Image 1: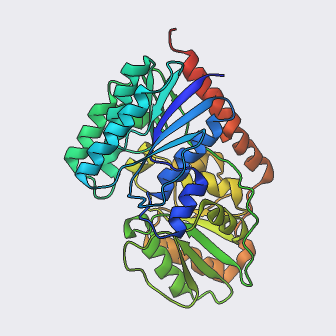
Image 2: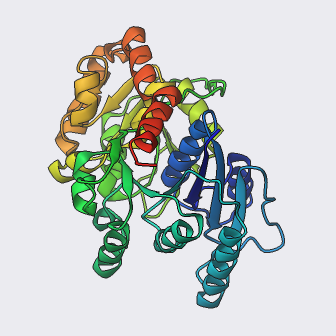
Length: 368
């Protein structure tokens, strides 16, 4: 069985849930879920070791290293960061020289630099897993974004959500696989509620359409429907009796809400730039777990589900208002169910088996 070294900030799910429940400043759940899903899928075909930089100080309760993850604290303090990178170097030095490849998250500067070091020590190719354009990330400086892109260009290849990201990082001419996402159905039981509810789980920033969604929902005054919102509240959002804020939830809880919801919703406003560069990972979760999906315009998913998903325009205030007024007028049954055949076809195309086949194809394409 081939071995892969995975450099990431993603914790094992049980450890992530522990720190979430105990109020630690944990990392972006979208990034965590994406890379933990990728590691979980790879373990079905490969022996995987994840060297994980934990982006906060765990105090006295440090996650326990296991057969898949070795944890290294990497908080914001500059001295602690230097010590963490030295510890990571020592871990890499001690590894056996029997790995086949390195996969790393290029949105973390320390991981990019350490991937280059690991390549020299282990003498194996490194692949950047491209999930976003750093210039699109909130609060990231232009200088930092340029640095991240420059660090990636010496990689031997890439796994990318889109062809546009390969262009941005300068890796289009190198060995690569485009893997738009991973759709893995959860084993969680559906959340039971007395009243039907819409569900959104994600980053609660106004630019992602959350505020417009809430305002349009409140304006429609749908007495027979609630709106559940999960995520970290980084901005003030409107509050009303039928809008329920759940805070940040675990991966299992997130899936339970998706399964139990009347419908899940993706309110992110359409942008030609973002549409070409990235694909919302939450839509893969939605299709894997939910019965009904409501979404703003997205080219990739419109091709796969032109009729089964309730498309609500580009995500401006009028689009949301029209949708909720139609829902109020026509009733909850007016939103289509996902077609079981199309859903199963999608899961076969973007499930763990297909993911591993593409990774194997990428590794096999390199010269010995």
